[in-house]
Amino acid sequence: MRKPIRRLLTIFAALAVALPSALAVPATAAPAASVVSEKRVDSRTLDISVSSPAIGQNGNVRLLLPDGWDTRKPGQSWPVLLLLGGCCWSDGDGHESWVQKTDIENYAELRKVIVVTPIGGKAGYFSNWKQAGGPRWEDFHLDEVLPLVEKKYGGGKKRAIAGLSMGGFGALSYAGRRPGTFAAAASYSGTVDTQLFMLGPASVQAVLLGAGLDPNGLWGDPVKDSQTWAEHNPAALTDNLRKIPVYLSAGNGDAGPLDAPGTGFDVREKTIEGMSQLVATRLALSGGKVQTNFYGKGTHAWPYYGRELKNSLPLLLGALGV
Image (cartoon, rainbow, N blue to C red; front, side):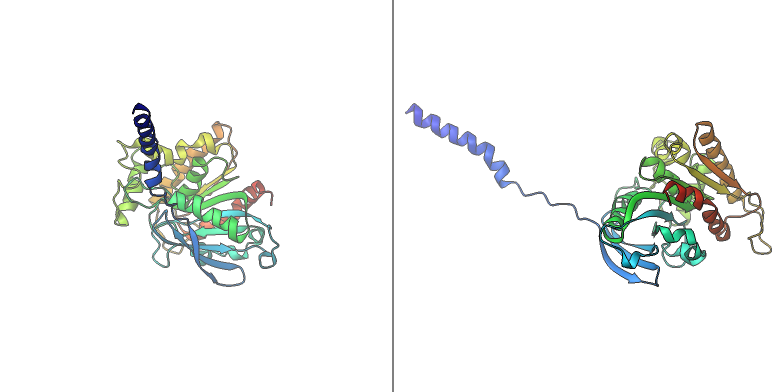
């Protein structure tokens, strides 16, 4: 009788091992980002809408197309310039702002690259939010949008990044957080030191409050969660940023030649100038390739951003080999 019992025990043991795996529910793959619509605005402008798990909604992206794009051959690609907007827009949702507010469509240099201008949230700060269930803007831009541009629209592996104001922060933060992703970065009047004394955290949290958002939802409390703040702060990422060419510009807050008559002093731009100068100095002292244009009179305004983008193109496109 012992042998049959032993056989039964052996069978039960085998079943005990096999049943859990046999009964287990197959893992469901996480949904992938996908393009859900396209709209050709004009001969050089294509708007796409991306279904994004990272931000939990459809995110709009504008592509400014290079010469020859419509007759491209299979596998043909162009370098990519990821161009980020600022915060708190009141018309549209931000992805159109660079084309609406400047004349970048007329920049001959940009006919050799694909310019990608995505939505970034009114005060998204180009980050994966610490708040539970918050948007993951970094994942949207770098892990969803860029791969889709490469897969479907001829984007290449050579990339540069630039932005204005909050987007200037985003450009340097992304380049510092993701070494090797971008060959060059530029900030135009960007909030590039979010931990500068009390000014940095106060300026960030004031923007969040103004947008009706939890001021601690982004990176947490500035003191208790200072490490999380530092992990996104360009001024704390200079060890990585010094490895690529960086362009920094800002005005001093006084009304300048591109401001409307009667424009008053802009304390925000003055603060940003100080931040940018500190980061530029830190980069220079660490051996970084930094180019600056602290142009004196000028406020936090679109005419300066467009001009500074054009001024920075030799640095950005030179790094792309264009």
